[in-house]
Amino acid sequence: MNQANLHKALWWTSEDNGFVKCGLCPRYCRIADGKTGFCAVRKNEEGVLYSLSYGYPVALQIDPIEKKPLYHFMRGTRTFSLGTLGCNLYCIFCQNHHLSRGYYLEKRRYEYYSSEKIVELTLRHGCQSISYTYSEPTIFGEYVMDIARLAREAGLKNILVSNGYMTLEAAKDIAPLMDAANIDMKGFSEDFYMEMTKAHLQPVLDFCEYYNSIGGHLELANLIIPGKNDSPEMLDAYLNWVESKLGIETPLHFTAYHPDFEYDASPRTPAPLIYSIQEYAVSRGFPHVYAGNVFFDPRMPDLKA
Ligand code: SF4
Image (cartoon, rainbow, N blue to C red; front, side):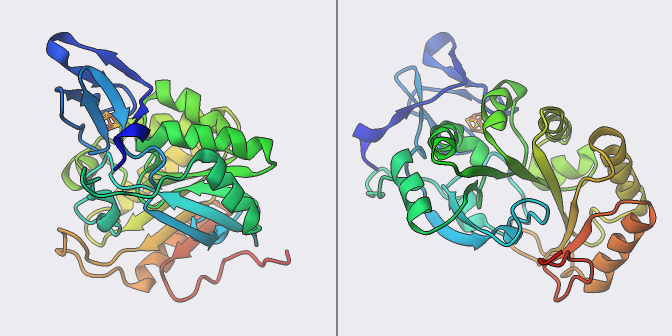
């Protein structure tokens, strides 16, 4: 990591005894001098908070936009996707833990990608959008915003693929720059969030409702873990919230889980379970409900439609 390129963070305040308090996500970490916050990529250096991940994506790829997943936004296009190390949740079933639980090593050199470079690469590869994705874009919010502003000037769209665990203060800066978002709902209870992600559900709901209120295109994804977040009660509570707060037209993606990282107490999600949840949501009147990580989704919209 090149110390010369360390980027001063936004959304923090000074505290007594050299501590800083980060206000980017609802953890509000109090960070001592020389230490990083829970996400491992925001560091207090002599009373100033820096973003260690700014300019240092470790995953760069071109994806079909449907992979985000977004089925009702710029269908059939490719999106330039980037992610950094670190995450502000601790999902014990994380399917991306090589990124989310990673951290930047001081002695290792990482390639620096300026915001201009990301936009240039996007245009050069013929993509029409940039996706902030893979691990958790909230924790590199400053980088997201700087790229997103340049991307808009270049006629590109911006896509947030996130756990939605961000303070409203930060969301009011970041979300208006996003043309579309897919928010990964982990389950629909505080108990599930605390046990399985070491976080809270309510801030995620607040983020979704805020983003919806400013007119952003929003789709939701749920990883279905058998026996943990697939009860009829939890599903109904989730659908009730979507219908009442976001609208029944909101596209919903239910995706299959496989045992990973620290959690293997639930078996791989059987495809019939995903299909039965899909059909139940459809029976309740939701028109855009999709199955993910299964062999075949009979409801996936036709590209030509
Ligand atoms: S973004 Fe990171 S440092 Fe800031 S409050 Fe969240 S976990 Fe803590």
